Image (cartoon, rainbow, N blue to C red; front, side, top):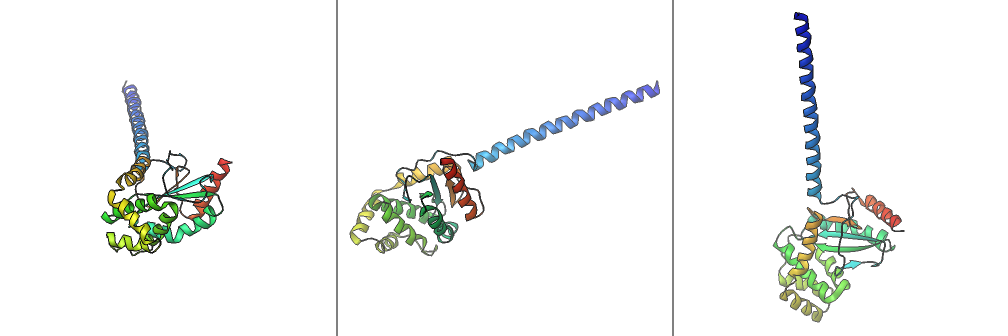
Length: 229
């Protein structure tokens, strides 16, 4: 009888331990699923999931009908955006835009300071008045500036006058003074919808670029080109 009771106790203990293990396994799985959901909500999208992006009324370079559209969400006061513009964009221009593989779009995401907002609003005014040609000229001179420079109205006008006529600059100033908040808000609202967390953030045909270097970006564009064909 004693032996029988001991056996029964072992069986009961083993069953109890097994039940606890199952509970912990189930709990771990639930926590993992919750974590994955939270991560997905935080990042907004993955490189495998194409998001809807409205490219209309946005400044771009290249062939509008190119099979691939690259979008940069950027801030004129962001040091990483400045580095991207100087070090990476020339490769994009030569390897992807000039070859007709991709068109390149810039959308404002002013997040650093008040000057970020002013730069975004002024550049939108430049685009509204002077179109793509004027916008990209101004875009280049603005990213060439020291990030510590204050974006006063006079400074922005001086920079614009470096690349356009005085008459054109005055037209831009009038539009700027009337307000371009809606255009900037369109960009920032889209960035929020896409889950953009910082600048620069790159999308390729609506897919978040998560690679490490320009070779990864070129490979991603090539893959998208093949899928388009």
